[in-house]
Length: 103
Image 1 (tube, rainbow, N blue to C red):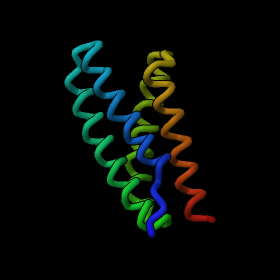
Image 2: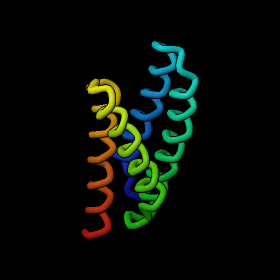
Image 3: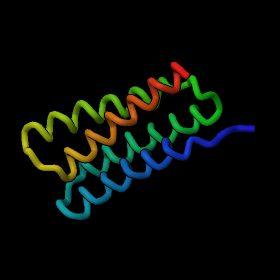
């Protein structure tokens, strides 16, 4: 029986939602595309982690990339939403995934 990675799927949903909101509020097609790509990757990563808690490669890659990109955007803009929140959430996800491999 698989233990479902609810946190991972929740994170993926947050990425998808953020991309959708960027498109809805600012008309940013790039936000929508990034939300779909990285949300999809994160969901696939959560699926992998559900099957094997040590299989974190896809999730780690996607959350790591988002934390760097959104961290740079936050540093440049100083705006907490969306860049600060998403970079912080992604960084927490990176730490969580690394802890999964240690445990």
